[in-house]
Structure formats: structure tokens, C-alpha cells
Image 1: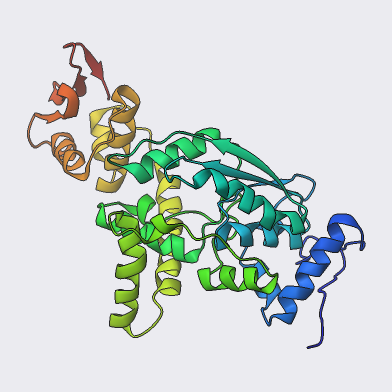
Image 2: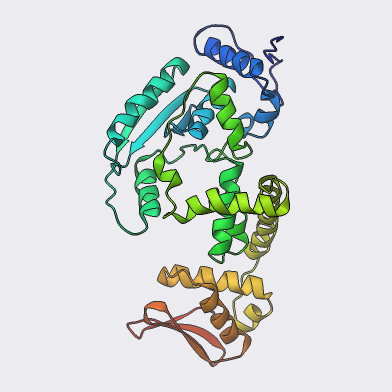
Amino acid sequence: MERHLYLVEDSADSEHPRDSVTGASAVALDLRERIDDFGLDLKDILSRCYFRRLDQSIAIEAAVSGGADSLALVILAKVSGFDVIAHHVDHQIRPDSSLEADMVQEQLDPLGVHLIRHKVSVSPGPNLEERAREARYGVLPEDVSTGHTADDQVETVIYNLMRGAALKGLSGMELSKRHPILGVRKYETDAICSAVGLIPLSDPSNRDPKFVRNRVRNEVIPLLCDVAKRDVVPIIYRTALLLRQDHEAVSSLYDDFCPMTLEELRKGSSYLISMWLRDRIYRETALQLSWFHTQRCLEVVRGGPRSTSLPNDYILIRKSGVLKLILPTKDTVDLV
């Protein structure tokens, strides 16, 4: 197969930076050749990544589990001209988890990438996935990049839909420095690893049906594809993009929505009032209102019941044209 190195003139629109064939640049060129020889369209894949919008003088801090997605994150960052600093977190959940960091380093050595090791303690019990995620992000750099893909995006959107999410939740993750390969498919990350000769680690917990996300990934999405007689991932991915645009448009309207009186608050749309209520009450109480409680609060604003009870003994009340929040201490806060 003829080799194409995709060396182009330096410009803001370049898909690849110009490299001299030394050091890290030699690694990047070798990776490009291997990916090209494997039959993958590297230019197309990179066009769906965020790397070209980032400053190449700043290294990518990458969370690397050793799976195909996180290894592909490192590879695509390298071929895009970035230095990469990898971070691996041992959650100490599985007996042999301490050995995985060594295996990850072996995968990264040919790429010239240094691995920083972190260790956290996550005890068995309810909400294991969420607690592990919180512990992981507690030790990772604030600007860390992850290997979430388009398939992960669809999994997240469906998961949030089952939890009753609104626009923000249904728009999923955003293609950004945090999620730079969000537009890439899982089958492509597998192929990228195969192209460069890496064998990703397999996490058995990803197949455990006791975790809801695993059932969404391994059962719900395949079933939707079967029912639709087509791959639904790009369809739901595009829907999430459209919903993100809608959310941004509504958020822009909300930024200009600054009611000073109850009467001004009532002039807003139900969606804007609901956003205002959730935001205002959260700032006073740290409560994240459910849909049910938001609707009850909206009825109070609209002139229905004079009051409604909220979690943790808070009460929203409308009195003498003022919307008030009664605290558990019986003190009151005028919201508007």
C-alpha cells in the first residue's frame, strides 16, 4: 500500500503540524504511517477530534486506563503534534488492579509517553461507579482529557433520558479539551490500537450487568440498532448535538432573564422560570430540584397553591406579592 504522511503547510486549518523526523516527531510520523497502512482515514478521524483547536505548546494530560479508547486518545494526540502526559488511577477495587499500571506503561513506552500513577481507595457498596468516578477525578489534573467516544456519548444520553434529564442532560458531553475524541467511534479506537500494534487491556467490570451503564451499552443500544435496522449511534449523537445547540440558545436567553419582582418573573416562559427556580433555590439551599418539585414551585409562581414543601424541610411560599423561601431554621429568604 502506498504511504501518505499527510505532511502539510503550517496553518490554522492544517490537519497535521509540520514535523522534523526527530524525537517525538519521528514517533508521530511512524504512527501516521502505521494507521495509514492499516487502511484508516486518519484525516477524517482527526477532523472529528478537538486537537486542532488546542495550543500545541501545551501538553495533553490524558487519563489512561489502558483500554482501547484511552490508548487511541494518546495516539491521536501524538499524531496531532502534542506531547502527552498520561495518568493512570488504581481504584483498588479488583485484587490485581495494582498490576495494571505496569501493563499500561508497557503500552505507552513505544509512544514515548510518561505515565503518572495515582491510587485511590473505593470500597464496595452502592453507587460504586459514581464513587469511583468522584475519587478518580479527585486525583486527576483539572484539565485532564478523557477517551470518551461517540458511543459513550450515546450511552450517556440514553442513561440521562432514563433518569428524566432535560435539555442539558440530553445534550450529553461536549466535544472539548476534556473530551477531544468524542466524535470518534469505538470500532475506530479498536482499529487504531490494532494499526499501531497495541493490545488494550480489558476491564471485566465493563461487562458486569449489575451496572446500569453496562446494560445500556451492551443490551439497550444493540437492541435499538436491531429494532431500527440501522446503526443508531450516529443518529442519537447528532440529536445530542442539536439539543446542545438548543440548550445554549435557552441559556443565552436565561442570562438576560433577571426578574426583580414576582410579576416580572411570571412574564418568563415556563422553561425560563423553571431554570430560574432551580438556580435560585440551589444557590440558597444546595438543593437540586427534581422535575416534580420544580413543577410544584412553578405552580406557586403562576398563582396556584400559595406554598409547596421541598426536601430537607424547606418551603417555598408566595406571600403579599413576594416569593419567599422558608428555611428549616424558620428564617426566610426573599427570592424575588
